[in-house]
Length: 60
Image 1 (spheres, one colour):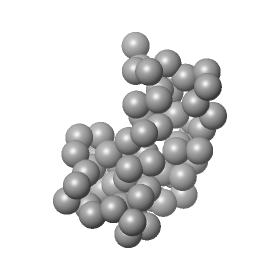
Image 2 (spheres, rainbow, N blue to C red; image 1 turned 180 degrees about the horizontal axis):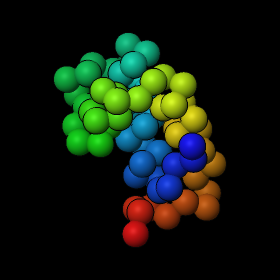
Image 3 (cartoon, rainbow, N blue to C red; image 1 turned 30 degrees about the vertical axis):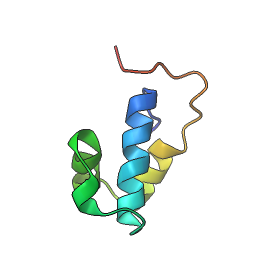
Image 4 (cartoon, rainbow, N blue to C red; image 1 turned 135 degrees about the vertical axis):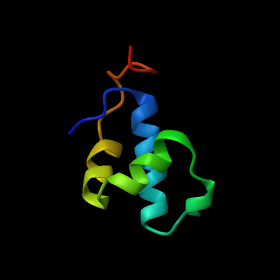
């Protein structure tokens, strides 16, 4: 699955960082916390690795 916005990609990156132990889970908020709890590391990596050049800032 590809990210639909830069905001979604950023949230996936934060959740992925927490899954890998680089960031504290307690530092996550909002969408990144939901993603951390509901998605696998592979799913998060796929979202976070989406090419962001053509993505809107926020999903409309």
